[in-house]
Structures are given as C-alpha cells and as structure tokens.
Amino acid sequence: MVNDVINVGNSLSVFDFDGTLTKHDSFVPFLRFAFGKRVFARRMVRLALPTLKCVGRRLTRDELKEVLIHTFMTGVDAKWIEEKAAEFCERYWTRLMRPSGLIAVATQVNSGAIVTICSASPAMVLKPFAERLGIRLIGTNLEVKDGVLTGRISGHNCRCGQKVERLEAEYGPLSSYHLRAWGDTRGDYEMLAAAQEPYWRHFHGSWAKRNPPIARIKQLQSK
Picture (tube, rainbow, N blue to C red):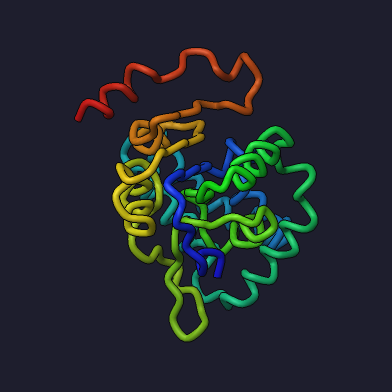
C-alpha cells in the first residue's frame, strides 16, 4: 500500500493530480486506453444525456461521475483494472505528467515533508503514479466485492470538502501541520483554504492563472 509508512514530520504537502500534476484529465483517457476505442465510444454515448443534465445543472458533477463509473466499472475484475492502470502509467507517464510538477514533488519529498496526492480520480487508477513518485495517495475509492467492481463509489467522491475530511482521516487535524497545497479547480478550494501555503495552478502557463479564486478561498478560510 502507498500509505503503509506514516511520517512523523510536521509538514504536509498535498497535490491534486488531474490538471495540477498532469497536463489534463487522466481518468477518461485511462478508460479509453483500458477498454479500447470501440467499447469506449459505445459506452460514452450513454453519457450524452447525463452530461447535458449536468451542464443544465439538473445533475451534479458527483452524480455524473457516479454514472461514468457505473457505465464502465460494473462487473469488472479489480485486478484487471489494477494491471491496466500500471500499463497506462508506464505508457503515458511522459506525455501526461508536468515536468515542473514532478520537480515540485521531488523537492517536497527531499525536504522531509509528508507528501501525498489528494484526488477525485479513483485511487485504484492513480496508485501506480503515486508509487512511481514515491509518495502517498488519497483518492476516490471504488467499491469491490469478491474481487469485482460493483460500479459504485465506496464512501464519497474525493473533491471539495471531502478532500479536507479525507486528509484529516488519514493524517489527523490539519492544524497540526504546516500545510502546503496545490490545486487547479473548484474541487480544490477547501483544501487550498486549509493550507498556510496555497498554490493555485502553480504549474500552468500565465494565461491559466488569470482570475485566481483568492476571494472565495479567503471566505472559506474565515469559516
């Protein structure tokens, strides 16, 4: 397990994964890789109506993700997904990962901080990436029964306030640490608000850093 050894240091460095350490989303490309283009395309057609409902705010992002996971993961052998995740990491590492993000992770590891990914993507898919980085991992857990995925999330989607809850469940009160956090979407606001050193789209180009959500993050810090 990625989190087998718990560091006793008082610095905690937390990185979102998709769009922060990577150049773009990883989960959908993983599904395309794992299931093949034809199966992927057929199943994505089923997502058209739920996606439109999400755009129209009749379906939440969490609910849309549940539909996506149910569509692709129901009845799939968990070991097969783990094997495909390892293959995906090996094949797409260079084109997926941001070099500046890799340098930052290594810097935090070398500083002696506890370093972890905290992502809404399935932990099962991200585990090979965390292992290659030599850091810990918190992600959305998929329900497994008798070695087979049920197509449901176990617990909650790891985004927004759930990121803070999952971090505290793993490491204890965040106030006990000097917390550094890197994120790039609305799903990271609460995590950034909990940090003494929040970094918004730190590895992006200058154009992507426009209009940082400082006011919203400060509002969350004051609660």
